[in-house]
Amino acid sequence: MKCPSCEAPTNQHANFCASCGQPLQQSTAALDRTYASFGKRLGAYVIDSVIIAIPGIMLNGILDMFYVSMFIVSMLYFTIMEQTSQRATLGKKWLHVVVVDEQGGTITVGQSLMRNFVKTIFAYGGFVALFTKKNQALHDFLPKTYVLDTATHAVAAPKTASTQQSVVAETQAPVQKVSSTDHTKDVNFGEISRKVKKGLSNMPGITIMNDAVMSLSGVRKQMEYLKEEPKEPINWLQYYECLATYDKMKLGVSWFRLVTNPASFVISKGISTGLNVADDEYEKFDPISCLKKAVVLSHEKIKVGPYEPFDIAILAKAYFYLGINEEDVTKKTNYVKKSIQYLSKAIELEKKQRFKAEYFFYLGQFYGAVPNEKLRVKSLNLSRKLGFVPACDVLKQMFRDKGMPEDEIKYIEIPLGETHIDTFRLTYKPKLEKKLENLVDGVVKGQKEKFVKTKQTLQSMK
Image (cartoon, rainbow, N blue to C red; front, side, top):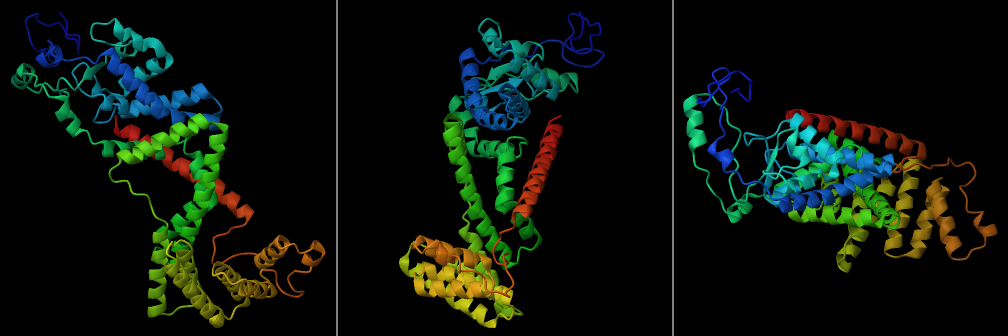
């Protein structure tokens, strides 16, 4: 007789190997194991297939290779999840089954990779579990793994034979039955949901689209600014504007996906909604909090001093955004009136024509929300005369919408001799070349960070 661990010759009546100290006979726990039924294994696989469908389809949209995309996502998902302390994917966890090694412990990275590689290549190998004594599928044999039903029996942690006495005591300990009700109480679906969301958000490849939208909208750049200067009101104000742009762009992407691939869109929305519902700590971020932060910081800056007209203009714009987001008519009116008062003060104090031109442009927007069409046009016209190109463009479109002939609209131009101002200081609106630069930089940095995090996660599981 040989030791199954080190293959050294042993006495057939011995309980432990004299060379390595490992147990030579199966423990009572191993003999009393309840192996997961084929039905439970199939059910868990169906649940997991739905979960990995979305990232797989999204990755396919990038690689345009469906089977390669699904293989990558499947390998990452099953390998990582089976290496956690839960020893199970979400599907297995929900159906109370776990993947273990011969000693009932967590499988190694090598076992997990081998197991899931075979499972992915030989999809129908799972049906082998219908005909094997321990309900093992084809992909369980080579790595020597088992799938146990934890709703019926407790699954022991891996054992180490430090001394013969401790091992004998452990192997002779009776297996305690636990009810499925008690087991369910131990399942923290909120924690599982947060882990899955974190894992998906840190997964390279499938997150390229989100990194692109975050970069183009300016959200990523503003997050960097906020990290560097969290007490600057302008960073909070522009972060709100970038978040609004991000939401619009995301909505556009969602509509595109709904039209081009409705099945993928419906499944992904269902999964994301389900994960958020399961997450008991989930609370959707409210961009309005950015405006309130900008208001508080602006007031502090103006109160303590020194301050510039620019700081008053930031406060005015923050109040304006609060107003247009307010449902209560009275509060809405008060916010907009405040914004007009503060911006008028900023214009009065401002000495630089370039900034004054931009402030008049915003004043036109504020009057448009009151609404006061006469003062709106007057403010935009003053902005145009000071050389602000966006004000000129808005005026042209306004009169075009009112039916003014094109041969009259062409006279609405920046006065001769005035400097053409076409950039914003108070609003995050970079030019096209800067947007493209931010796009490339954001996607490269975002994907690099995710590759590093994924690598660290895999290394920590070894």
